[in-house]
Image (cartoon, rainbow, N blue to C red; front, side, top):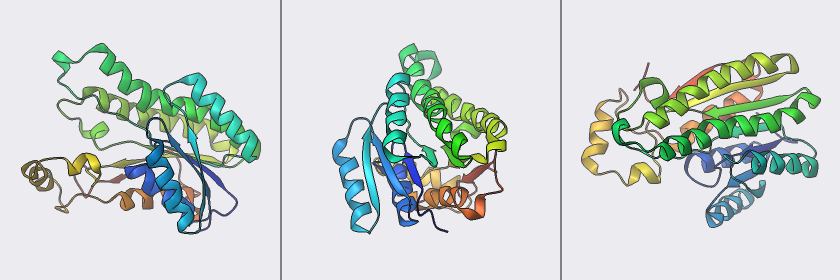
Length: 247
């Protein structure tokens, strides 16, 4: 599958799953715009990894939760690049806590970034996609959005809401040859899971039929499938990458 000549924006693309997606799309020939909001060094490292492998990438800083920042930056990106063909809404945060003690600002922060941010970015990106009559949007959801999780009611709500966003957008934009899908990772090896105590990791593995945590490359592979030629007749769907944890 080749994405040569395509421009791709990966929000939260500087680390973890976002970095793996950025690398994978670049390896397929896409010019990747690596978004970050607070860590320019990680974004620069991701860009270097892409260019060292023979790909091309630019860094673009904006906060997806800020409507004006996100939409104006994407508008300028499209003007400078000529098009935006692929959008991966990967940016996300956590503010964990039990519902009884959760502060309103922690609820708002997670919903604003994880769900509203995807809406802002997609709204800006689809304008160019509709004109070109081609586009691919992938929203990175989570197993937590389907199964729920104690202490993550804000995160679960945002990721569950992303399912409605995905399906509604898929229906709205299908006539313009724009597909919209979601990928829902389970527990993936990232900096966050690496910090978990070993006993917690073992408990998590015990809940997974394949008995292991996933790799960031597993998630990137699902995204690559959906934006490539093999996924052109798929829209409004969710690919679960969770080792069987949720079926």
